View 1 (cartoon, rainbow, N blue to C red):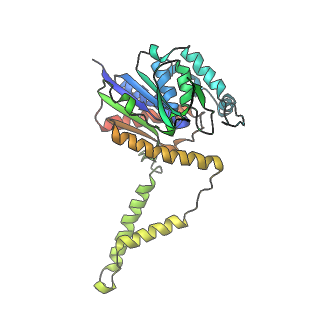
View 2 (cartoon, rainbow, N blue to C red):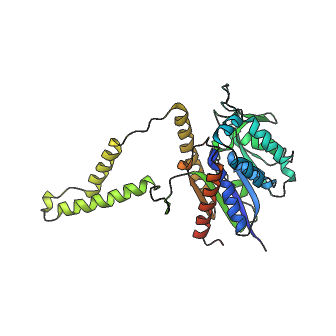
View 3 (cartoon, rainbow, N blue to C red):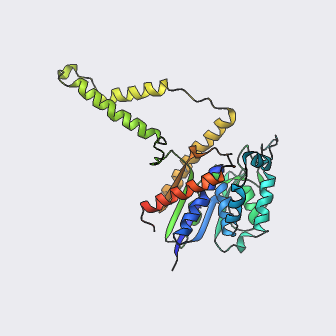
Length: 313
């Protein structure tokens, strides 16, 4: 009997290609996907997988160069978005062939946000391509989409990692894939390390130095608090560090990422997954859609690591 997995695929722009790698790793380990919910790029990849078209999409996406992808994104200055993305959606529609969500062999939920009502909307019926179109409407980038009289936008606005739709799945394993995680330690690329780890190493080395300086001094002459002084040192280091210069779009993107990370943590607290695969937000920029091959490979590698960690063969 095949092992069963339910997937929550998060939002994160081009980093969402990593979802393809995660699904491939699960398939190679003999898992059958029995439920999938996705926001934004997670809704796109999850929908294509449920319709049996993910591999065709991956083959197409990995063949594209940067300039070719830019033409497909179809930049256009408008009131509601800067990318029309109609040409990419035409490719998706061609792959899906007009299938409805009800016809899919796997229970599927595309998560969107009702901009007027201010709440999450789960799309579990109707044309699959329309559900995907609504879920990928990134604020300020791709215009919202109207379905049944509701103005719908990116599911990641309120639910960047949709765990609730798969909570009742009859699965042996629930897998959440966040593509907006913090930096991860990579044994093959030791320079990729989280800021907290660098600060921890700094704290340890500074504390050791203070211990040496304090040795042999009278108690009254000792430094008041190692931790206090180390914290001050860390503040000075942060203060002296160069501040990155962010343009208007970068500020907007970073603001959204911070909010989505907090929302995702709340979702996982309410519905903790058995396995969490985290793709670092520094892996690529949200609109680097020409880096499909790299992100797919990274997703599979991180999935293998996460599954091995919990002993999921």
